[in-house]
Amino acid sequence: MKKTILTGLRPTGNLHLGHYFGAGQNWLKLQDDFDFYLEIADVQALTDNFNNPEKVRLNVYEVAKDLLAMGINPEKVHLFVQSKIPEIAELTVFYSNLVTIARLHRNPTVKTEISQKKALFGNDGESITYGFLGYPVSQAADITAFDGDLVPVGDDQLPLLEQCREIVRKFNSIYGETLKEPEQYLSNTSRVKGLDGNDKMGKSLGNAIYLVDDEETISKKVMSAVTDTNKIKKDDPANPDVCMVYYYHKLVNKDEDQLNNICSECKKGARGCVQCKKELIQAMNNFLKPIQDKRKYYEENPEEVQKILDKGTKEAREKAIVQMDKVRKAMKIDY
Image (spheres, rainbow, N blue to C red):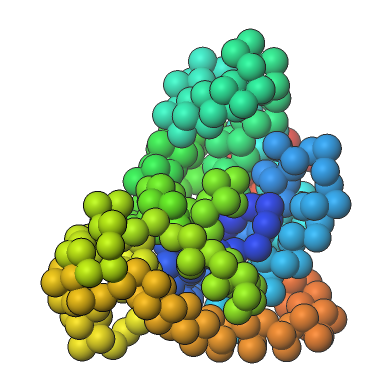
C-alpha cells in the first residue's frame, strides 16, 4: 500500500511563483507515488482573517483553481476543504489538553510569527488570539486525522512537525498506542526570492508574481525587479548572481545555452538591464501561459471545481471518520 502524505496551504490569496517552485513542483511528483491528501486550510486562514470571512471563502476556490491549473490531478490527490472535516476540529479539542501554553510560546515558528504581529499591532500582545497561538495543535490534528506517514515541510516548518510528534507521543503514552508519528519529507527545493531581493516571496511583501498575473502586470513587475546596484551604465560589467532578473531567468527559462549567454554577456557588460528584463517578460509569459490556459477552463466551469472539492472532501472525511473511531475508543469515549 502507498504511504499517506498530508500537506496543505491557507487560502488567503492566489498562488505565486514561490508556491509553485517552493512546493507545487514537489507535489506534482508526490501525487504519483503516495496516497496524497492536500488540504485547503480555511479554518487556519481564519485565525488571522476571522474578521474577513468572505476573503477566505473566495480564496478557497481561487486556490483550488490555481492548484488544478498547475497540474494537481484530482484522480490522484484528495483535494479537500478543512472546515468540511469536523473530525479535525474534534481532534484539535482533544489535543489541546496535551499541550501547555508555555510550550506553544516556545515553538520557534510561532515565536517568529507572534513577533511579527507584535511589531505590526503593538508590543502588548493583545492581538494574539487563542486560535492563532494554538494553530500548531490544529495542524497536528490535520496530519493525524488521516493517519499521515509523511509531511512535506521546509526547514522553517520543522518545529510545527515536531510539535505534532510530541502530541502523538503524549497521546499514546496516556491512551495506548493509537497514533503514528509522522515523518518529515524534505524536498530539495528552496524558498523563492522576491522581486525586491527579499529571501521570501510573499503576498504581504508585495514582491510576488502570481500564476494569474496577465502580461501587462508581469511586465510592470519585472521592470521593477532589483538588479546589480553596482551597474550604473548599460555597458558596465555586472554580477548576475545578485540580480533578480537573472535569478528568475534561471527559474522559468530552461534553455541552458541562452542562460549561459545571458550570464556571460552580463559579466562582460555586453547586456543592458532593460534588454534582459524584456527577455524575461517574454520567458515569464511563455512559462505561465499553459497554467493560465488550463486555469481558464476552471474559471469557465466553476461547477467542475465544486465537484472536485466535494469528491476530495468526501474521500478525506471517510478516512478521518475511521481514524476518529480509533481515537474515541482509545480515550474511552466511544459511547
